[in-house]
Length: 321
Ligand code: PEP
Ligand code: MG
Image (cartoon, rainbow, N blue to C red; front, side, top):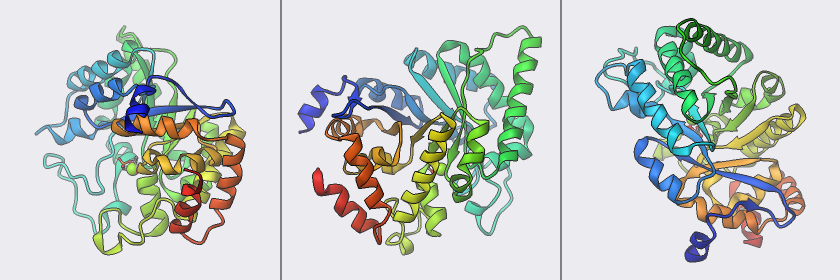
């Protein structure tokens, strides 16, 4: 089966009834680019930029970041590369950043919250991204969005950087989609409002699951409670997809759930347009998409959100695969 999946990996992922699903790769550093291309990723759905900050002993400079982003954008050419802005805090600490100790880091000063509070650090990254935008097909994504004002503030800083660069005579692409991660339950519940402000949304099920189920994603003691297939999580996914549909914007998923071929039918039925996953699973997920009938998937998804728990969901999801 793996051989057949690999042989067909270059082909698009289209359901039996003709619905195209984009299958993208998640990458965590420049080292992941080769495998993503080899496995025929149609783009990058999540480029985690933390490595630039974690590998260094200093805040990465605009130039250092520009070099890294440019490399990835060039490698993918006309294929979209969704670069996520810094998601620091939570469980990711930076020795040189002097982040204050927090009682509940996952509920604390993390990701977009940290960036908005430290505009110099944020703007360095935004300027590097904008400068790199001329080398490929850049999409910018903000993590851990919880409300509209965060989206507006982040976009305002992005505009500020664009204007600065224009004044400095530095070229910037004039068509950069701006999107957000949906990984906080509040964002999923108000996705209709957030969708008005952005060009795309991408669901991060790793955090969405931990926050929805109140189960720390890294805590063994509560690992039995942590299940991205839990109907509560799937209902939030469905709400987000419906909001995206209404607003006419793209909605994808870049959490681990997107990489499970057995869940592909449910995910397509919930309304996702794009799945982003570790490159190794791309051939299998594309295969799984090709076995799906989008109409049947819709009724499977409606059934899935009414199940009692994640185990039941997985049971009905695997029924046809
Ligand atoms: C997620 O939360 O699902 C996600 C994709 O982001 P990360 O795993 O980097 O927190
Ligand atoms: Mg996350």
